[in-house]
Every structure is written in C-alpha cells, then in structure tokens.
Amino acid sequence: MRNPSGRGLRPNALGTFDTVVMAVAGSAPAYSLAATTAVLVGAVGFAAPAALLYCALPMLGIVLAYGRLGRIDVNAGAAYSWVGRTLHPFLGFLCGWALVVAATLFMVAGSLPAGALTLSLFAPELAGDTWQATAVGAAWFTAMLLVVLGGVRLTVRAQLIISGVELLLLVLFVLGAVVHGGAAAAFDWSWLGFTHFDGVSGFASGALIAAFSYWGWDITSNLSEETRDSRRTAGLSALLGVGVVFLLFEAFTIAVNVLLTKEEITAGGGANTLALLGDAVWPGPGGKLLIVAVLLSTVATLETTLIQVTRTLFAMGRDRTVPAAFGRVHRRWNTPWVAVTVVGAVALALFVASNALGSVGDILEGAVGAMGLQIAFYYGLAGIAAVVAYRRMLLSSVREFLLGGVWPLAGAAFMLWIFYESLAELSTASVAIGLGGLAAGLIPMTWYWRRGSSYYRPAKLDAVRTLAAEADVPYGDVPRQHRPAADETLATDF
Picture 1 (cartoon, rainbow, N blue to C red):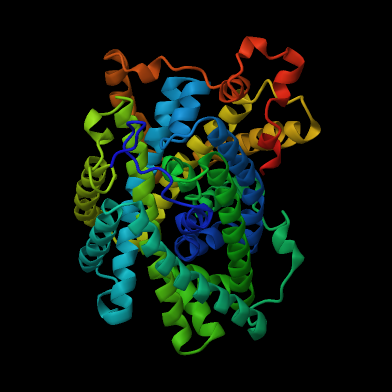
Picture 2: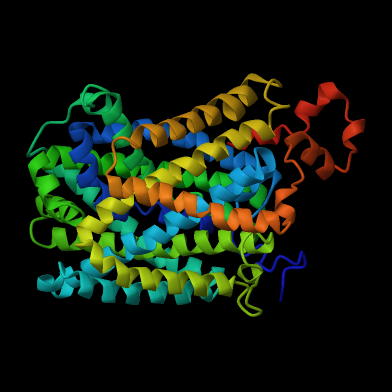
C-alpha cells in the first residue's frame, strides 16, 4: 500500500531504537577505525585522539543543525531539500549530488575491503589479490542491495544482528585493552591537546580524516519519511548515534597509541592495524575476531550507505532534478527500486574499473580523502542552512542562540575550513576525484533547471512560518514579539 501522501515510502515503519541503530551502523565504528587509523596516525601521530575529539565538537553542531531542520521539513533528501529551500537551489542540488558521489565512492572503498577481509579469514594468501577481493566484495554488495530492495523493515532487522555482534566485539576489546595495560607507550593527556599536530595544515588533514570517520549518522534524516514522530526522532537518534561512535573511536585510538608503535600502525595499514591490536590484547584469536568485527561493520555500512544514496536520489527524482524514474517506488516493498537498481549497476561497474587503480589499500587511501571533501562540503552548507531557517528565533533565548545559532554555525565554518585547507594537503588523485565529482553535478543541475523543475522555484524554509502553519495560525496573526517563541520544544529537544 502506498503512502497516502503520494510520496511512496512506507510511513511510520521505524522507531527511535531502530534509527539509533542505523545511525551507529551508518558511522560504521569498526570499518571507520580500520579505514582511517593508519592514515590518521600517519598524518598526526599521537594526536589521533585529539583529531577525533576536535572534529566531534563541530560535528555535534552539524547534528544539531540536522535535527532542527528535520523539525520543519521532513524530507528523504535531507540537506538537498533544506539547503535548496534556505540558501539557493543550486547549492541544495550540489549538496545532494555530493552525498551521491561520496556514497558511490564508498561502494568501491567499502566493498573491496569487505572482499579482502573475507578472504583473509578463509584464504589469507588471496587477501591481497584485488581481482579476488573485487569478486567477493561484489557478492557482499549484491546481497546488501537485495536486502535494501526488500524494504526498510528487513533492512533494520539485518542491521540489528550485524551491528549488534560488531559492537559487542568492540566493547570486549576496549575492556581487554584496559586490562592489558601499555606496551608501546604510557597514556598521556597531551594526546588530547594540540601539541602533537604539525601546524594548521596538519590539524586540517587530521580533521578531514576524522570527518570521514563520523560520516553516516545523517542516515536518520534520509529515513525521516519512514520514521514515527520523525520531526523529533531523526535528530535525537543522530545525536545518540554520534555519542556512541565518539566513545568507541576515542577508546580505540587511545588503545592503539598505548599498545602499538607508530611504525607498526602505519606499516600494517587498514584492517591489519586492528588485527595487530587484537593480537596485542588477546594473542591468538584476537586478531581474527577484530577482523570479523571490521567485516561486519563494512557490510553494515554498505547497507546504510545504499539507503542514503537511494533515498537522496528518490527525493531528487520526485523533484525532477534527475530523471523522474528515480522517484518511483516498488508497489510491494515501498522502496525506490529504480534508484537501487541503477546504483547497484554503477557500483558493480566501478568494482571492475577500480582494478586498474592498484591495490585495495591504494584505492581505499585515495577514496577516503575524496569522500572527506564531499562530506565537509554538504555538512558545512547544512549547518549554515539551519541558522538561516531559524534566524527569526535565535534571539529569543540564550539557549536558542547557542544551540540554534553559534554551535551549528561554528560546525559549518569548521567543515568548510577543513574543505579549503585540505585541498593543498590531499593527493592530486583525491582532489581531482573530490572536486571533479562535484563539478560533474553541474551537468544535470543545468539541464533540469533549464527544463523548469519546480525545485528551482522553492517555497522558502522559515521556522516561524512553518510552526505557525502547523499550529493552524495565520502567520500575520502571530504578534511579532511572540513569533520566536512559537515552539519552545525546538530548543529543548537536543
């Protein structure tokens, strides 16, 4: 049965616990640690915990921005819709396009390691073979594609099992690391300070990698049209999800500093770093168990990334800013089956093409930087959009000013700053992929703008007007001095 609104996605299918699980799975704790630990330590050394900490603070500003925007515009396109209705439709389209590009890159950067990790468990001598890893990774990706196609409830059930086992293994190893004690270095509070960064450029490099680590929690907003009480649930779930992954990231990077030398970390690379950590905590089976955790995390985040990109394309197709077919849903499963099918076909083609780029590690390292640029771009614009949408309410209280203005704006400024600073630090390949991916979006944007898509003539997103409409009170009848206080729960939900 279709949604009565005509949008097609199944309403009220998910609750708060479901979306918290999806937020955690979207950030993929074990995968993110495996993908970024060696790169992060190579960039900032002992300052890895500090990079994650100082990126978490502005990231929370973006989480607040998403929660507040979701209160006044429930849309599967999330930043694509919000930025387009507050700043400019061109910028909104590029936000949606940036997520599509980042997610597509992740199909390669995530599926190849999934294949390599599977081989390392059952046929270690084949783990470094890119062709073999591509074949097994493609099989994992296809399986997740079918799960996502089968509906949001099936997706969440699979996620509960996969992420549940992953988190259990990670918590056990955190506890094991605490009991084990230091082997390479003693814990030092300076690891959470600025002394270990190599200047401003070094800090920016570390922050960009950290931003990629946190990426994925915003899936709660892409699922908002399918969530009960989504105006509150999506933002709250994102906040809880980021809190969980932040604690895990800090615990593991500190454990890595304590138990492994920088040479061991950077020489191991990728999942091998966690395997070394596992062996240090639990000699013998420890390394294998952490590889299992990374494999499960990789598969889990493939699923959540598929949801993000297909829901975004669904919203864009519905608005006729990409082919309208992307806005179609399956009559039985209420999923955007055209978007799922096209994304799957493109990703599988990229799997084959990626073999020409080199080893699994080379592909992963280049993709992380490019994805970081895309993420910083659309998160930064979303933060600004929240401040603009709530501008009439910001002076109504100190709480509103800080949570609705200062923190989201600081988060946006931080994201756009690391975007700019990192252009000089990243490899030429990463910059070319990152900026080239954004530039490619100018083609469909111009085409559908010239064809007169209504998206490019938006109704402006204004918190006070929206709240007045929800209360069934004409905006002109609301006394100006009372308009900022139209809904106090907006400031207290977070």
